[in-house]
Each structure stands twice: as structure tokens, then as C-alpha cells.
Image 1: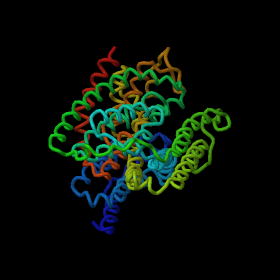
Image 2 (image 1 turned 135 degrees about the vertical axis):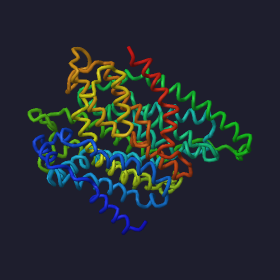
Image 3 (image 1 turned 45 degrees about the horizontal axis):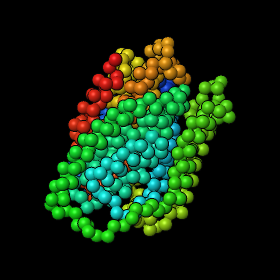
Image 4 (image 1 turned 135 degrees about the horizontal axis):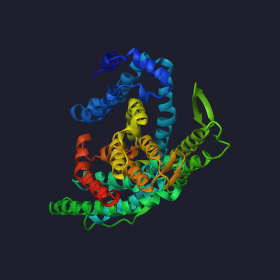
Length: 486
């Protein structure tokens, strides 16, 4: 499809979307920014279309998709924003657009870019055994690291060495899938640094080490998944050895060594900036306790860009830039490093963030109407929505819902006292079930993109959901029965 045709698709998308009724617009005006009371349910259709595009286009028009994914994302964003502006007013539309882009998308993509840039300069050289035991060790180490350097940091550090270790193998997509399950998601449950939802909980009063209570769930899920992976990989490995796929037996072995370790300093800067942002948010220098809001730069009427965000992003950009400048070209080449994966993530997620505005707004207002009272209900509802929406704001919605239940004892947060077993369920649902789809958590998509860039034929969007449905959903049922049904 030509660029002209893509533009026509954009214009058609804007024109074809039904305009909201004047009554709905009036309701929005009366409700201020409580859009969830005014937006109709069908306003989430552009978000559904965005998800279907990610699922279908790579299968039916892969080459066209590679060149036009950003245009498609803009089409779906316009499909929501244009009629929204007509019905609610362009001032309201601009406010919502700036809020989601500046306060949510920009910090999100800057963090991903920084971790991607820094991890690309760390190279593990030598003979890495693409054996079941070697792969098991990679997955275990990554799972342990994820809570301390973040799921994105651990994923970006280890995915390339894992791919190089298994380069000789024909069947390796399953290894990447289990890597996403464990390293990119479940492993990040123990600290607020591990996954964004837990960090937001920390900012709202959940003690830093309270999330260590998820350790029994982490151990259970890790043991089950690693055992299942080892059995599967061992069978495939034996078949490949029998078929004579491995040709390096008997060759001189090269000792393992890491290069580009100066990038660990930049990685520490990034992780430290996230922790620092949380600490500064509680300081009167950066938080206006009278207005109950963060101080910052006034961007638009009623919209403030917090100084803490600017500091965090500034440190991350500095760390990433210093990494790129100081890392030798040979190290990037050894890592097969290109900017393509982060460009794809940035292009697709701008569409996802904009089109999910109505879904989050409706959920934020009506989440308490879902009748959630038991831990298992919070686990599955939070998890199901975190599989498709950004798990951080979804976590906040259900944390607020849990805080409104009127618990008299438990974890005291800024949004109410939450019963420990309910908070455990919300936390586990948001972190664990982000593994259910490629878009459930940011590193999922990045790992998939890097794997495909290195020649691994990864499952499609629905193909990956088949994996998660067969492997993860039964595991989460066991989680429910063991930990959340009391």
C-alpha cells in the first residue's frame, strides 16, 4: 500500500467513526475530567481495532506492516481523538492527549529506550551452551534479577546472550516464550523496582518490602514453569542432537567473558532514577501537600509535568546517551544491536496508549461497580484487564477499589486500608497476567522483536496467546486454589 493510500485510510477512519451525541458531550462537560461517566462503551472500539491490527496484519500483510505499523497506530488514535474532540471539545481532547502522552507514554518509552540502549552495550562472549541445563540457568538467573533491575532491565540484558547460545538450534521459540513468562513478567513481583504497578503502589503508601510477601507465589510459579520448560526443551534437544544439528562438538571451547561492563554504571543510574523519583515524590520540595499533587511545569490548563518525572527522564536520557557514546562499535555489532525493536515498540504503543483512554476512564469510574469482594475475584479481574491494558493504571484502579471496601485492618495506603490478601491478589494479578499477551507488559513486545530480528520465528499474537492459555492459565487456576481461595 502506498503512502497516499495510508493517508486515505487515516481520513476514512476519522470520517467513519460515529460522532458522540450532544447529550454525551453535555454530560462530559458537567463531569469535568470524569470521562468514565460520559463515554459510551463503544468508544473502546479503536482500542480493540488497535489490538486486532497487531494480531492480524503481521500474519496477512507482514511486509506492508513492517513499513506502515506507525501509520496504522496513528489511524486508530485519530479514530478516537477526532470524534472525541468534536463531541467533548478540542480543549478537552488536547488535555486528554497531552495527559496520556506526557505523563504516561513519555516516561514509559524513555525508560524502555534507556534500558534498551544500555543493555545493548553489554556483551557476554564465549561458548554459551544452548542445552536444556544452560537455558534453565538463563531463565532462573533472569527471574531472580527481574525484581532488582526490573523486568525490562533483566530482559534486555539476557535475551541476546540466550539467543546466541541457541543460535544453532532449530526449535527455540519455546525458549523465548518461557523467557517472557518468567523474566519479563513473573520474576518482577518482589520489589517496587521489579514492575511498574508495584512501584505505583509504593508511591501510594505500600511499604517497599511488603511485596516480598509474593515470594511463595514466585517460588511456586517459577518451579512449575521451569520444570515444564526443562521437560519440553530436553525432548526437543535430544531430537536435534539425533538429527545432527549441532556441529561444534569437539571444537575448542572459548571461556566466558563479559565486555562493556562499564554500562552497568549506566544501568545503575537508570534503576536509581526510578527509586529516586519515588523518594522525591514524598518530599515537600516536590509535593504540594495542601493541593495533594506533585509540583512541576504547567503544560496546559490543569496539567502539570512533575519535576520528579523530568528528573527521572533526564537521568535516563543521560545514561543512555553516555552508553551509546562510550560503547565500542564492535560490541554493538557482536550483540547484533539495532534500533528497530525500540522503534517498533514506540510506534505501536503510542497508538495503544491513546486508544486506551476511554477503556481506562470507564474502568476508573465503574470499577467499584463490579462487585469485587474476594481475593480471587481481584486476582482474575486485575489480571484479565492487565493482559490487554497497561497493567500500571489497571493496578491503581483495583487498588482504589480494594481501598474502598472499608477494611479495618491491613495495609494503610494513601487511598484507604487494604486487606493483605486482597492487596496480594491485586499485585499478583497485575504482574503475573501481564504475561498473557505480547502487549500485557512492555518487555514482552521488545523481547519478541529482538528474537525475530535474530531469526527466531516467534508465535503470532494469537499464537502466543495459545501458549499462555495452555501453560499459564492452568497455573493461575492453581494459584487461585492454593493462595486466594480461603
